[in-house]
Picture (spheres, rainbow, N blue to C red):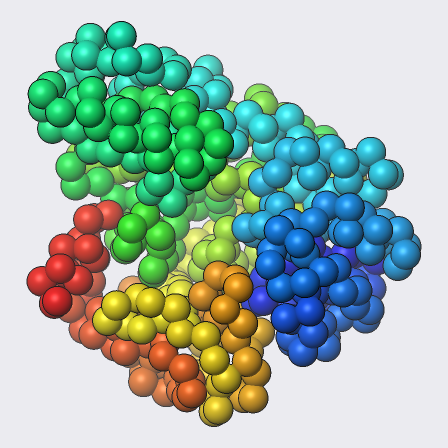
Length: 446
C-alpha cells in the first residue's frame, strides 16, 4: 500500500480522497493554486504544495509542477480525482515514467476511451450494444449516404471532448452538410480536432450509466446503474440509483455485459460505461475512465467505498469483493449544488457568509466550503453534493425535500431553489423523465 498520495485536484473531490486516505492510514499531499491557499483540502491534508497562479492551465493542469510536487514530498502515487488531468493519457504516462503510481487505468485505456470513435469501435468489439451510426470519422463526401443508411434524425458528435460542443441534431437531408461543417468548426475550436462522427438520434432516451470496478488480476464486477437523465446542456444536475426505469433483470443483464467486457479489455480501476436507454434497449455512448461526480449514490446503495477500492487496486491488491457480494439496497439521489443563479445559471462566485449543510438520518454532504470561504471565479461552479438515502424511492424523495429546505448557503446564489421546485414536480416524483425533460421544463418556466 502507498505511504503517501498526492491529490491532483481541488474542491469536494480532493476532500473525498483526503478522507479515504486518512481512513486507510495513508498520508496525503494537497496541491493548490494561489487562489486556493485557504481551501479546505489544503487545510485537511498532511502537506500542501502551491503549484502556480489561479488559472488552471498554470496550476491544476501544470504537469511539471505536479510531478515536482510529488518528488519534493516523496509521494508515491497520484490520485487525479475527476476533471482536470483525470482522463489525460499523456499525464498518466508521465506519472508512470517517474515511478509514481497513477491511481487509475492505463494510459492506453484512457486514450482508447477518450476518442469517441475508437471507444465505440472497442465497445462493439467487446459485445457492448452501440447506437447505430458511422464506423468512424465522417467526411463531407460520404455524409449524405451514411445519414440515409442510419435514417433521420441523426446526431453529429465531436470525436474528442464533450459537454455538448461539436454536437448537432439533423432532422432532414437539406441541413446535413451545413450542420456537419458547423459541428466540425465547433470541435476544432473547442478541442483542436475537427473529427466528427454520426449516429442515430434517439428522441426520448434516458441516460443510464453502469459502474465497474476491476483489478490487475483479471477480476471485474459491476455495482449497478445510475440514472443521470436530468441534464441541462448535457451537464448532469441530479442522479439517482437505482434507475426507476429498470427492473432487476435488466440491471443484471447490462451490468454483466459491461463487467465481462471490462474483463476482456483488461481494464484496471473504477470506470463508468454510459448508455442511452430507449424502448428497452441500451446504446453505448462513452466510457469515463475515472471516478464520477455521482459515485456517492452507488456507494450508498451498495455499501462499497469506491475510493478505497480504487486505491487498493492501484496498489496491486485484489478486489475485496466478488459479484455475489454486491447487493442493491434502497434508493439514493444526489443533487449537484452549484454557485450559480438558479434562474439564469450564470456563475456566482463570492464569499459565503453563512453555511449550514443538511444533516440527519440518511443524509450525506460532500463539500469543501465553509462560512467565510471565498469561492474563486476560475474553476467549476460545483460547491457541494447533497446525497440522500431512503429504503424506497418515495422515502428518499421525502427525506430529500426536508434536506433541501434545511440546507442554507448565504452570500452567494446557488441552485438550491431550483431543486426545491424540481423535487415537487409530478414527473420527477413518478420517475417519468428523459434527457430532454429539464431543458423543456426550464424553457416553460422562463
